[in-house]
Image (cartoon, rainbow, N blue to C red; front, side, top):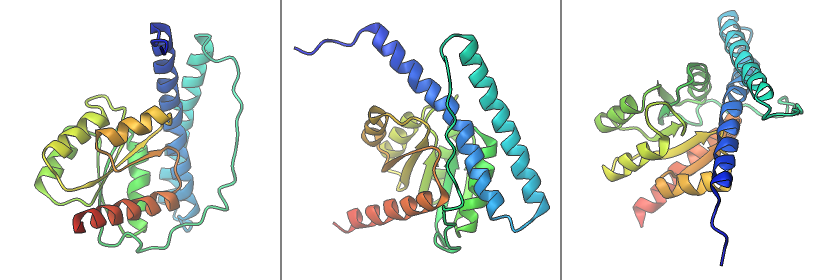
Length: 222
């Protein structure tokens, strides 16, 4: 007979999941804005906006690490850097005609996704409130919903269950720092078409948006 999970195990799992989310969110924002910088063509306003967002996110990440070290939860940290010069920027127009609704409580990340997905041709709308996003889905056609999971007002899993209950026709991608297999399984079981872990390159994001749209189209034909 399998051993039932202990309360201590559940607490550790919840803590690790929370830490992964909190530390991953600012890193994802930094990497997205780095992609904006690489494609800015020297536009000084875009560069200023990107550097401000990167600075704010880096400061947040530093504060989170300091809090973990102070609490004794984190003994050491190793930084791994990957070269982004090898990441190709998607061709403009790949998402032409596709309406994307992005939901996240990080305004810097929303600005980066609005700019990057817009350059890929998408019609992008951003919201920080699950209630506002749900109202939009009820009132107008949206092809793809990109949403974080851990948000202050309503969890992404609760939102997608309401969307599926009301039979709103939208492809939904969970875009989150939660990366455990259990997190992916729960997202799919709740009604998401795909679970993507932050940070994610724009090329991979565009590819997966096209994938879930093609997948839903095939399902409608059956």
